[in-house]
Length: 96
Image 1 (cartoon, rainbow, N blue to C red):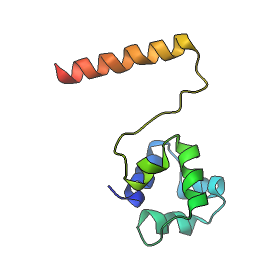
Image 2: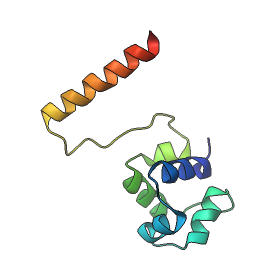
Image 3: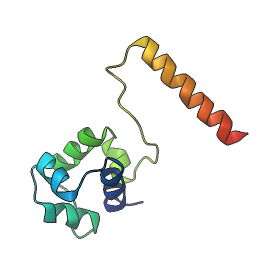
């Protein structure tokens, strides 16, 4: 999957319009469209902003790492444990 496709999916999953995302990134809505249509590539600065907004790595955005990650650095030990239990439950149900 390419950057444009990943960027569009992330934006839609976050229920953001192109205009809303454009404001957060400091670019025009037409630039968001260009990215999503693969007509332009984002600068490194914009790529970093995307990763911070959607809490994914730049490697994920660029398709270098297919694993989607989530920033959990602000969660406490109990919250991390609860997330682990949920993830393990999903995995076991999927593999059943």
